[in-house]
Amino acid sequence: MISLKVFLLFTIITGVVYPLLITGIAQIAFPVKANGSIISTNEGKAEGSALVGQAFDSVIYFSSRPSAIGYNPLPSGGSNLGLTNKKLKELVAQRRLNFIINNHLDSLAVLPPEMLFSSASGLDPHISPQSAFLQYNRVADARNFTNKQKLRLKQLIENQIEPPQFLVLGEERVNVLLLNIGLDNLANESIENK
Image (tube, rainbow, N blue to C red; front, side):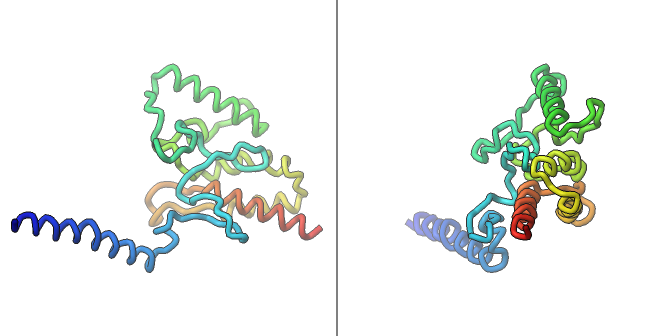
């Protein structure tokens, strides 16, 4: 009987009290992060999470890193294809060709690896600054930007570059969702100023 009481006590403590306490602390101390780092428009519409990559297939947007799972967060994962796998080599060759054609690049252009290989989670929301700048001309041309708008777009990319975590972990990166939201804001500003 005592063991049953102890079991019920610890079930209440670890299954109810502790989760509620931690959730409450997180909601007070880090409300944005605790709720999934959701990015919303000025109208309050959720655009996505800053932590989860998503597909941007239109030429008027910067492209995300390829995803082996179609950016679906439920089965999160990579392809698990080894470097000597024929299918991986074909995928990389096709991604390279598509990126070069879509962005009107020279066939000998050196592409950043994140645009050729999917991430281990399939949900990486970041690309390198180099990847963003390689897409710059395509996006500017697709939106018919003037030279002044192109300059502002270049500044937008530079402003979106995040440093390595704690200045030493990882590399500089650009969050594609935040970049594309900034791009839409830039385009809307231009329309309003006309």
